Length: 142
Image: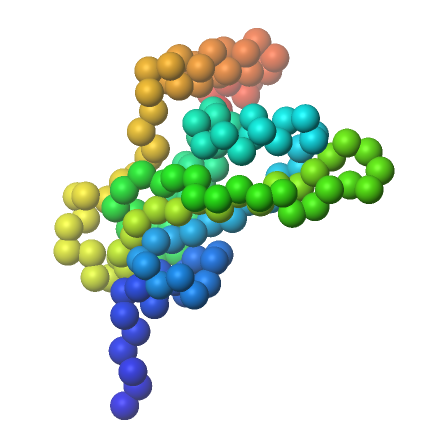
């Protein structure tokens, strides 16, 4: 008889980071940046992380998980520095509490979007207006 997989094992199997076993889905992103912007980008409160946080929720759902909280930046580290030039690669690891969708007995508590502050909402609206000025046809798609 095959051993039944626990919820923690299922979530761990679906995560980018394996072997943790704490029912948190983890998604990693690697971005290229200038050396002088590392401190700004690795700040967990930087507005830069909003899109990644949204993508973490999407990926969790796509992989058969139900997020049960807000995703957070768990870790950031410089993984490569160019020998010549001014660029670095930074790996960001985001985490969110999840349960497998097949055993989710409380689907109403699933988190589907990142909670935004009023300042973040205003900034997103400002960016959308700037995109619209540059490409009016693309505004509706944004």
